[in-house]
Length: 286
Image (cartoon, rainbow, N blue to C red):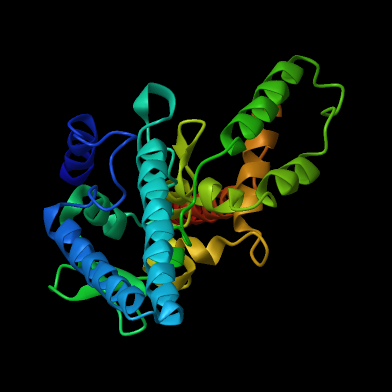
């Protein structure tokens, strides 16, 4: 992806260090706006101090300190963004595909705007494809971030165990498949990772679309049932069923999912019908 390369190139050539001011790491235009606001507060602080109005002077001093805390917090968020963006194995992204990073990529590569609202609270904006500004408060930036954890490792450990136990088909698995899958999916945002990312070399959604192609094409499965949110394991069992089936197949290669069994039955019925029709035709001809 061009966007991905652009973000990584920015990170590799970053001229800012740990000692950089929190006001200077978002581009010169934003730094100038921030400095003007701070300078205005400093002038008001000096004015009220000179007039002996300590109450108003304390107000402006508090505003400067508040902005400083917010900017330092934003700096930490920017550092966290780049840490998650390329800190996995081989520099892979730790953000789940579930996370829409289009806003973040622009803002943290100095293509966003920092402005003050009427309430003197910082707002952070990025223009979308239509040129419309999408503004966020600081607390909104990380709200929907989903970072990959140990979900894949937990699942792969179970799958490898199932494969090893395959040699002794006379005994059942030494773990409860449904319980283990539920345990993985119920951890924080794990279900979002399992629905959106490659687990053991396969994507759940890709497999689901292929397996249910006819139902999707006929409208039996509408588009809203293909959105990642629709697979929330708290309300929907499709994600659970998929990973449970993968574990059962790892243990028993002949295991059939209910859908596979139904398709096999339909094929068998169709074959029988065809054979019967051919037999009747031959008898008629005789």
